[in-house]
Length: 239
Image (cartoon, rainbow, N blue to C red; front, side):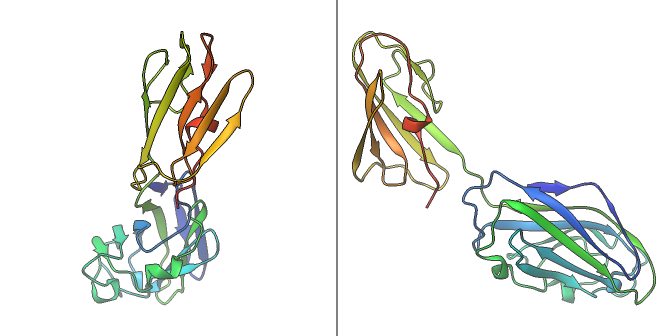
């Protein structure tokens, strides 16, 4: 979840764009299931003044809500209001204050193919039908998954750690170390072609697991200290 918390005045007959930087999400392209929800917190007594859009880093635009709600005696018209593709009620059929999760007026599929990592913008226009100002308190976007990677090295003898990406190896005899790598996208089982990589003063080879990872490393050295680093442990962008 990424959250914008700086606050921004919403002035009659003006438009604001609140920017939120997103990074570290893999895979980095929006698909139908990438975004869990977009949530906003806006104080404004005339939600019918507001046109609110989400803009992706690569320019795709999705309409969240436009001129809905009329007047509200509650100044917190959009207090913790969320938009989700799986919501049961459309925002344009609801009445203010909008507390809960709604279907946006636009379709989340309009964002498919956009870059996830980069600067997202919440664009809010006050078109001044009622000439009342407000404030954007915060907004957030939550993505379905980040990339979690698990490492399992065997044997563990001579390794500084057995569940990290780059253990230090200090075997007393020539040892073959195997690492099993899995992630939250379900890529686990080894398959595919073997690749050999000579590295001096050590020599080891790595086998591709078919997901773009290297899985097995053989170290041909007796004694000494070496690092089975990320070159051998993992080099992957999920498919």
